[in-house]
Image (cartoon, rainbow, N blue to C red; front, side, top):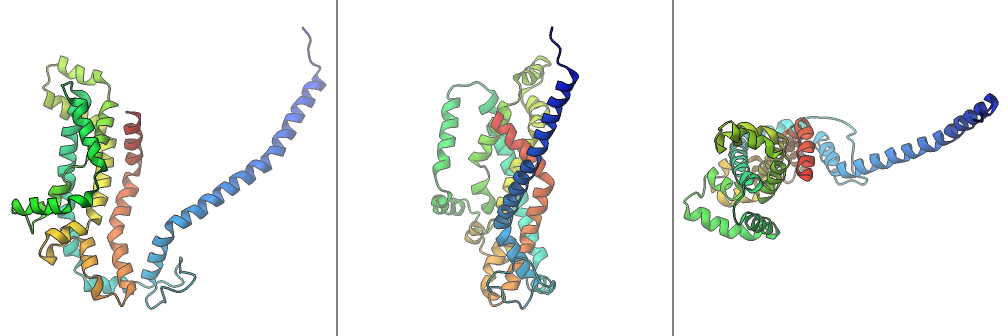
Length: 296
């Protein structure tokens, strides 16, 4: 066997080190350009929110000046204190929490109980039922507004929180998401429960539901955002402005203080803070739930 002399090995190693050193500046430049582009994209996407935040923190500032004030030049909380005193925020936040809690509970129960049979049980017409459900997703929700109103009126629920929540008590997307998540759970877990003599309800509650917690977190996050920001349907159903949720109250009172855009900006920032906080604490489960549904 021929052996390379030590001098040749050292020369090869030296050439490899030189090649790595020559590639290092190019790699650093590529990373710098990539991070710069990502930073510019983030600023572009966050531009409207940063502008709204700056407007809310700068009372008396010309908000429509060019270039728009993305970052505040001074900070005062006058708009927040004044709009908090002008609008009964605790009352409207309480209304929003009631509507959101009812909507989350109904969506979670109905989505789980509908998706589980479609994913794990074998019965005739299962694929047809799922295909019909998915096909309804192409229908715009706004086209059902009149039908929903007539149905809620026939049930005598006009002016009630149940009337606000009932038309959106279950979402086809949530059923689809949970079905895909349940399909990712091995059948052996359900079979082990049957071997132990557990009923289908106990298998569902004790074995299957704990396995799909990331999917449940996705539903809770998405529906929380939807109910918290909902303003059109509550205005249609609720005949008492005192029952409005926060988003509807801000829209309803928009004309009363339209002369002070800083108040509108401060009220909007206060209304979106809970959504930001909830997303920050649940983003890990959100990503796990989405990835699990895609794999399923």
